[in-house]
Length: 127
Image 1 (tube, one colour):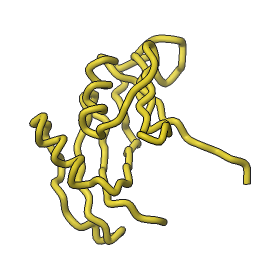
Image 2: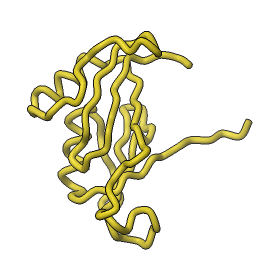
Image 3: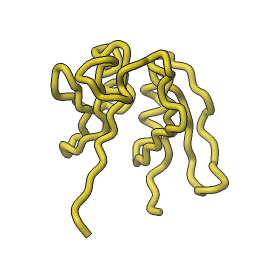
Image 4: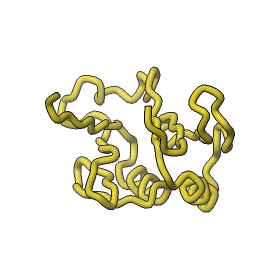
């Protein structure tokens, strides 16, 4: 199979505020100025943040259409507790606190980012 990687790009209202939020929650680094790449310690791209309405991308043009309908950002991690503590430290609202997902058999919690995108953070597992 051909090597293939997905670099999800989210349109955000405030590029710097969103980048800071993700850096704080996931304890990751970022690169870039006009498009911010959030990267792991190993240099793997986690997410890309893009300002609404720039560069002519059709699905990143109109924030009035709403952000993220039909999208769930599902993060698998060995650092579930640390990430939950990071969220608590910035007093960010939680949609669903840590619980056992009966379908995956893993603990997880869910929240929305600054632009309303829905995130589920789960214990690392293989499919």
